[in-house]
Image 1 (cartoon, helix red, strand yellow):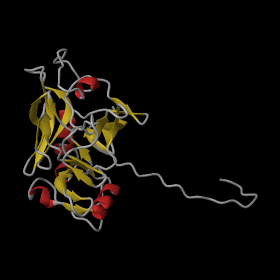
Image 2: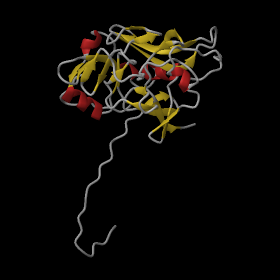
Image 3: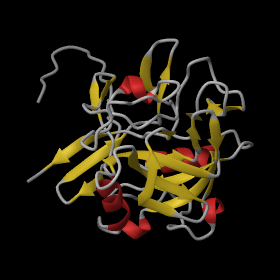
Length: 269
């Protein structure tokens, strides 16, 4: 209670709602605003401004700020990373991780961006999102977004634990219908995003200088190495126009895959 003794101007202040995602029975997270990228211009890691923005690596495909380019962005940009405990190896050209071990953890201590600590989800946490949390089967689907109402960016939508469908939008869960099952223009996606939806664009993957799958498939690193049989392999979340696999895609660590990081929202015993 404030006693007003003279004229005063009051301003309303709104906080952006937080939409957590359960990744285990004891932990919820929030996703970064966009995919991770590295640029040699600043020698820093950062997040794309929009969820549908992406870059592969220097000289290859990128979609940034509504502009699509087949020649990428500035020299040294990286948006598809090697799996490594070292951020330096993850952006290196070419890949050389002679110290790789089956005990490695991806970007071992996470990354600090914007003063906050971010990390990757494990294969089990992605699986919990897609298969175990309450209503899991109804909270993901393939989609295509047209931010400029011209170029279409295909990908994969995740919905938060508590979610209300915007009146102007529709949503079809699962993989039936492929990327065309959920098509959003700029305004419709803005409404979906304001309700907590997360979009992972289909950026494809790279292996040294070979690049494939842009706008056809997505490969997102988990923090899980394949301990059982090969120190040179790790697990990625894979999706295409007909399939979503949270833990079945074992890939060489020298593959370049996308990364979407999270920060812990709540942990409980």
